Length: 332
Figure (spheres, rainbow, N blue to C red):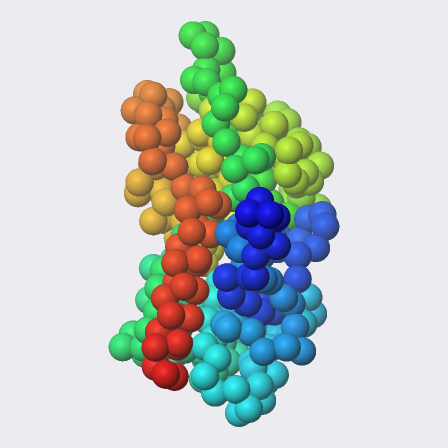
């Protein structure tokens, strides 16, 4: 009976998340909600994707701006008029500058009025919004994205054997030039012209239609185990994507044991690059040669303390526990 009582124990608490997980390739936010949902359920939480019943805490991301969300800030505001004790976390993972768009920053600011705690996916993104609308005196955290360790891990990776090329890789769902394709094209041209020796470039996913690769090896978009297997065949990851809030593609590469080459304008990616990689300098060929020389030390540093989806989910769990516990105490 004790065995069954543990299995059928009541949930620790209930969380309502406004982004239901989807099967297939739906970007970093989908990976975030899938991992967090699985982690919370494993630890006894009840996870819902609606406000039909009263949860203990709410998490909203994209704040209803995306068609994939099931509720947004307006619904949360109406809900809290009836249930003012329920705390709400707003996860902020985007901005206008990344996509040359308008409206996102203002919408995030408006939505923040219903949030009791705000989570940013990088310090850079926090500071970006603090310069525009976010009040840093309000409760907030920075939780770095992490990928699914079942698929993105360094098991089976190695440094390039003597005499064999160092294989750089990048992957993107978007074909927008802001994803760094100008830099990837330059690397491809340097390799083709033999201005750098013993390098290969792999490109996974999509790229601008007008971009014609010379020697880069290309692969269609992949996800999960298939993507992880491709990344582990490489030795270094390159991201020149501009103004990234906190990119999941970078976390996937790092977790596969690949030190990072990053552009100084990659937003939140710089924070990962300072720990696990090297900035792309003015002389790209010289940067690549230096990266090759420092690869063993960079890899050792990365393997000693890599990012992970488990670390990310644990930080959210601890935040949720704190908010629910504070709420219970304050309402007694």
